[in-house]
Image (cartoon, rainbow, N blue to C red):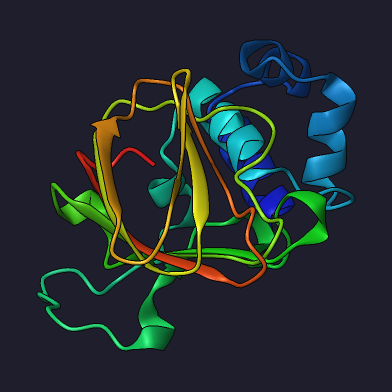
Amino acid sequence: MDIGHRLRAIRKQRGLSQRELAARAGLTNGTISLIEKNRTSPSVASLKSLLDAIPISMAEFFATIEETGQSKYFYKAGEFTELAPGSKEGSGGQPLSLRMLGHSQETALQVLHERYAPGADTGPEFLSHDAEEAGVIIRGNIEITVDEEVSVLGPGDGYLFNSRLPHRFRNIGEEVCEIISACTPPSF
């Protein structure tokens, strides 16, 4: 997906200038320009701040259009929606993948398949959104910070917290970390 083009189209559709969006999101006008020209890729946390300033959820931003009137119950791996910016690099040039099952605009639950390569994280800024989230670590280790508490979780461990609290995910291990998580209501 062309994140810059999509961001520019939504910003213009909502009648926002780059300067106004930058002020609302706490970023510089130059940063917005670079993102819209695809000269830089925002961290997950930066993109979340931008979308909150519009306002639009990450799920809605990355949504693909399904045929209306048809229920869909099963999804093959290639039908998940990639929510990580560019899905190629997270912080520090490390791969980060956040894949959403289904389309969160149609449900009260958002389910993600998350993969963090060694050193990958959600960005230096903390995330915060109006929901509750939970997850179970499938493989690898992940350092999770919620408010001021930090914990390293491994396979079989889980988490559950109010997503309004500032939080961040970071793979401090030497192998890929894989998580299955859920968020309700869908707000990420």
